[in-house]
Length: 137
Ligand code: AMP
Image 1 (cartoon, rainbow, N blue to C red):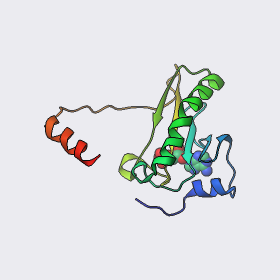
Image 2 (cartoon, helix red, strand yellow):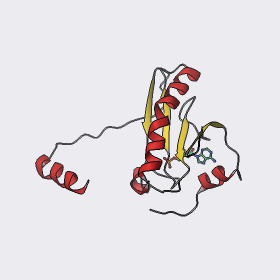
Image 3 (cartoon, rainbow, N blue to C red):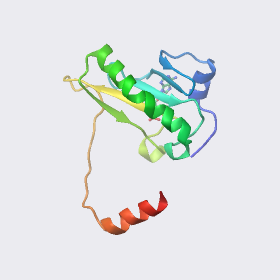
Image 4 (cartoon, rainbow, N blue to C red):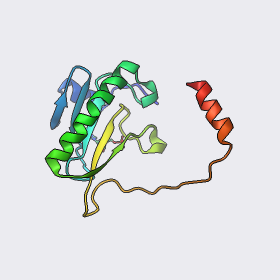
C-alpha cells in the first residue's frame, strides 16, 4: 500500500493528457490507455488513496453516485450490452497504479473485454467468518 503520487495524480493535475469522458468535483473518468476492449474506461476519485480500503466515505459515495451513469454512457457509446466492473487492490490482486480506480470494461461477442478465471472453492467456517467480518465493520 502506498499513498505516494502516481501517474493518475499527474493526470488530475493536467500535467499529462488523458481522454476525459467525465469530471465533477470529486471524480474523473477517462479512457484506459491500454484498453481490454473498445470503451474501456477508468473512474477515479480525486482524493488520493491507494486502495479502496483507504478511501473516505465521501469520495466513495461520489464514485458510487456516478458509476451507473458512466456505465450507461459506455453502453450507449459502444453498443455493448455486457460489461465488467473491475477494481484491483494490491499488487497481488493485479493493481499496477496505486490510486483507487474502477475499470468499466465492455464485453463483446468477439471475446474482447475482461478474461476471467473463476477459481471457486468450498466455503469453510462460514459462521465464524461472517461474524468476524461483521464485527470488523
Ligand atoms: P490496474 O492493474 O487495475 O492498476 O490498472 C491500471 C490501468 O491504468 C491499466 O489498465 C493501464 O492501462 C491504465 N493506465 C496506466 N497509465 C495510464 C494513462 N496514462 N492513461 C490512461 N490509462 C492508464
